[in-house]
Image 1 (spheres, rainbow, N blue to C red):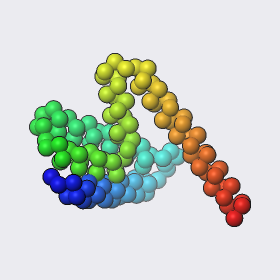
Image 2: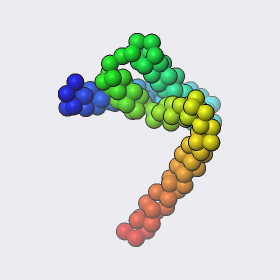
Image 3: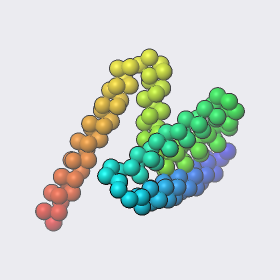
Image 4: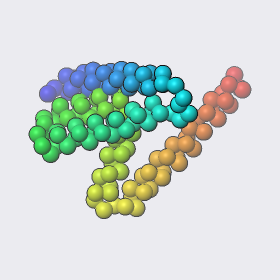
Length: 131
């Protein structure tokens, strides 16, 4: 598949993934009595299941075309939730016996992610004060 066509298909799949995430999150947020961010958790857990299903079908059972697999996993799943990619990469490390790397991946992505969020919010506050 030519590169431009591949990029357009990935973008289209990404748009569909974004719309699915938006719709699912919106539907779950309407349920009463939610004290936790259940909609994000639901999207992430469904995304992990879908990623596992698509990857296994694409690479183990049917060996789908690499471009189609890329479109589904990078395009749709990447827009639906990148958490599924994080889980897939961590699971791959665990499967390869790389337990320390898997643990570091989980710890660093979560802790460093929180730190960077705080830094970004602080930077925005600093810009607001100096403007």
